[in-house]
Amino acid sequence: MNYCDSPYRYQRRETRLVTIGDPANGGVVVGGGEPIVRQSMITCSTLDTEASIEQSMALVDVGCQIVRITAQTKRYAANLEHIVAGIRDRGSNVPVVADIHFKPDAAMEAVKWCEMVRVNPGNYADSKKFDVREYTDEEYSAELARIEEEFAPLVEECKTHNRALRIGTNHGSLSDRIMNRYGDTPLGMVESALEFARIARDRDFHNFKFSMKSSNPKVMIECYRLLAARLAKLGPDWNYPLHLGVTEAGDGEDGRIKSAIGIGSLLCDGLGDTIRVSLTEDSPNEIAVCNDLIAQIPELTDPGVEVPDVPLSYDPFDFERRNTPEVELADGVACGGEQTIRVVVTQAAWDKLAPRIRPGDDVKPEAIYEELNVLEVDPREEFTVNCATQLITVKDDVGLPAITAFRLLAGRLKALGQANPILLKDCLTFGDTPLEPNIALLRAAVTIGSLLCDGIGDAILVRGESGAGQSLRLAYNILQAAGCRSFKTDYVACPSCGRTLFDLQEVTARIKTRTEHLKGVKIAIMGCIVNGPGEMADADFGYVGGAPGKINLYVGRTPVRFNIPEAEAVESLVDLIREHGKWVEPTAEPVPV
Image 1 (tube, rainbow, N blue to C red):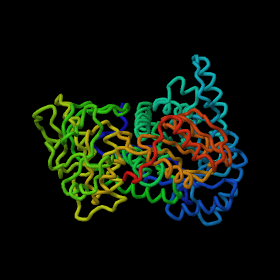
Image 2: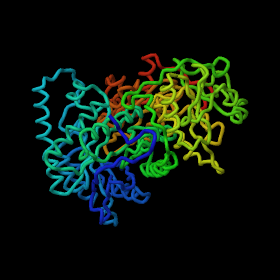
Image 3: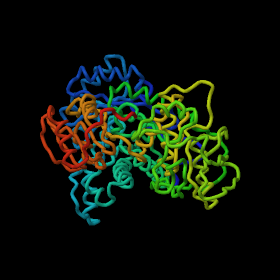
Image 4: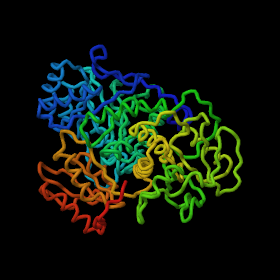
């Protein structure tokens, strides 16, 4: 199966047009070669009409092209009439999307007022109780018939009102029916979405797009690749647009890096027609990152590049780290084999960093580029490898985008029957003016992160960020976000919406203050239960809004403490971590990141 025209040459995926609202009157056209559309979501209660209007207009003012608003019940959905009217009275025709979970009657109300309705097949008229049972073919067919009975009326209403649909699956919020046949897998996410798409197509409704979101960039990338490949195999009229997003990415650098890895990798492969960068921050901040990320894609791809026809070295639908022999980089430091992915710096960066390195630091340079025994090659040309343990990289100024160059290098080595470890670089050319830190961060995250998610890379070198300390921190943060190395606490934090039962930004900051020294511990901070248990399935601990002012605590996806008063919940979380043997007291001096 092919998920794009070529993993070596940029070519945007061709899709049909989907219209959200009236394009002649402020609506948006998605797909069909149109520019990538930026969207975000308001965070206040949908019952607060004025706050919803104000937050929507704040998004419009910074260039948001689609505004999403949650509607958890029919009562909330009914108030969308007043919110949309208020936005129109302010002079904006920005399309509004109603975000629906669990409640078909809320969707049927929202479709009257909003240009688009988002449904999650995992919980729209379906169950998610984490039950374990086997379905016979007859039982499975009966469940599909029941789902169709619930979903078909919404499709008909969308046709009547000229609305659009987003069929959006989330990793971890798949129905029990899908989970028990396909597991919590990319295939399960794709099959769940296709079931709903077939119901729409059977009624000659095609004004919809797909999304396949996960908090894990590797999973998210695999899901979208598999979906694109499945759609291509189903036929040319299955060319529906894709909405990209890494859900619960978090805040600050970590949230931006994680989003850049997932979204940027797919954009560089030509996939994606709308995007949202989900940050645990004020929503307008998301649009600035969207703008910067979209702007980097032409800089990281070259549509006209000529590349030899070399088979891929990896399976794009199933992550597996490339198998290599072990190589010594420096005294006591090796890469490849079973070793963790290493961080290399230039001599100039080392000279600045060396006086600041303390015994026991986790964030430190592990080798100096100029001292490495590394073979630099142009992967378009034939080259000879002297031995199996020779470290290899792409030489600078080869005229190839870095992602293309390193994929080609890995493919060349496989064709030669060689498995040499590879040193990744975030850039192969340098301009006269240093990159702004926010741009350097995005470019390095997209380039190195996407290659790591392909299973390529045994050591990394970040040079696009001009500051020595910043480049070192960026390298480690990329490894953590890509799931390759854990040197600090990892947080899965949702971006907040009208369903959120506490102040996510404030609570996330409080939890980080108490726990950010816990190396290798993963904590999920979820505003409500909609995506909570499933999305945080690979987290060690979860802090989830259960009711106004009340928090439920989880170990993995299992709830263990209920209805804790919010004022006591952070310390209760610390106690839970301590009970499970993962708590250590913070050191006097925090480890720099």
